[in-house]
Amino acid sequence: MYIFLYFYISMRKFLKHTCALILAFLVLCSTFSFTINEHICGGVKMSVAIGVDADNCGMEMETNIAVETTMQQTPCCDDVTTLIQGQDELPSQQDVDFTTHTFIKAFVYSYIFVLPTTDHEKAVYKPYVPPPLIKDIQLLDETFLI
Image (tube, rainbow, N blue to C red; front, side, top):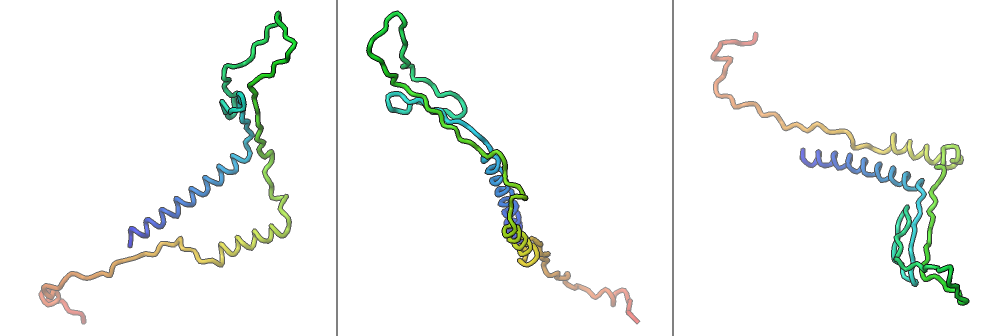
């Protein structure tokens, strides 16, 4: 019984802390902005990097100024940069309209005051069994209540 109660309380604390960390991480990630750089060579994705330049495949075309050809050569490699923009501002309490505010107040009131909470630990005691009576001490000492 004690083990189950201890396990239940510790699991509840663990879940609360885990949910708080996940929500904090979600808010943090939604405000980040980052770039994804890709190096594509011949239609095949050769390298992908987040936040830094992608590695080259080494097949860049060298242009020789002395020798010009009449045929225009197209490069086989291409660099693609994708920008993922995060939120600049998080919604504040002033952005909440009246109906949402009323819902939040009703939800908090019902959660705190109406729903029963199980956080209170119940004191569980084993029934006390007195030691076995070997000799009657009151008769031995001759002490009686008057």
